[in-house]
Length: 234
Image (cartoon, rainbow, N blue to C red; front, side, top):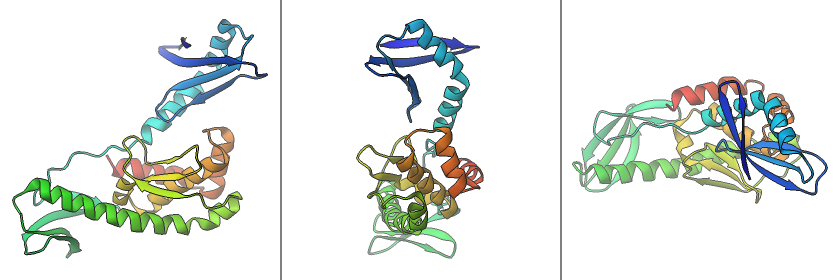
């Protein structure tokens, strides 16, 4: 059942599920959706009031999720434009060559290609190289976080590095940690923030006070890293 309630000028829409349970819980999902699980005998008007009482927390969580979604401007894959790799901007240089390859040389991202005028092929080469680097670098940063995994009292979750449209990372219901391969554009300390964020979700799935206590304990400067990530990836 879809219901809504007002808090000031904001309207909070939520999905209500009622079942044989003793308590009411409110969750904010990564896409900003709000779900409420309530006892089957609970009065809908009282549920609305409970949601209103948690409205500031709900709106804050929705803002946090919105900030955590990747925002990257489109690239044209032409010579001279900039591409970000591990927190640094590199100007793209396209050279004619007999074999296709991508490398960083003299502070530039160099594409050597048989088809220097083909933007689509340049896009393929750059993205393929970025994905290869992401698989290597993100796995290295993940392995560096093993002491934090031990401190959290968890076994290293299976890691998957893949394209993600709305998130930098995720902890799935099957126990995997997913990292967005676009994180290869971010600084290493920002990559580490995303990793620790998701590892804390292994212990605490929701953005509850307990979750933020864990995050503060294992990465006291997480807010600085998060801000750097958001500012640098716009």
